[in-house]
Image (cartoon, rainbow, N blue to C red; front, side, top):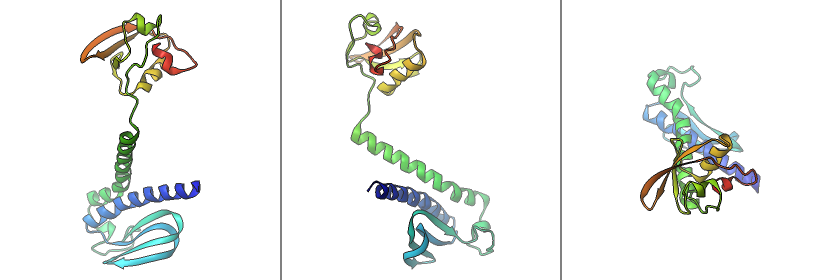
Length: 195
């Protein structure tokens, strides 16, 4: 089952990547001979306009086969007959589409799962956070001038700067404050950094 899921996800990534090449090729007047998902012999296919759309036997990979991309065609609609900028846009479109897809998936995941905001859930008595005046519910804005977006950035900071003095900017009830502290790094659990 895991193999099928992996093949499905890989196929979606390849299809979206090749779609980028396909759309920019069409926009620049380049003839696309075949747009396919998979490799090997064709299982199912149909032709619409000048392009053959097909599903191949081996369920990995894919292609957007353009006229003259191998350099042999002198046709007006061939890849090599177009301007340098048109060719660059077609070649770059695949990776750009991958970036767009990753950004969309990241938004979907963040919207459904949420993220770990840098808000203190507790402050233990006798630890540096308490001594610096931090309270439960304070939101950490920056550490040594570096903006903090996620709670895990706080624990990573403490791993890479053990025992160093830290200038903290935090927000409490809509007002911003600053504090200095030297964190205790507790090996067992990074979340204990503030305790």
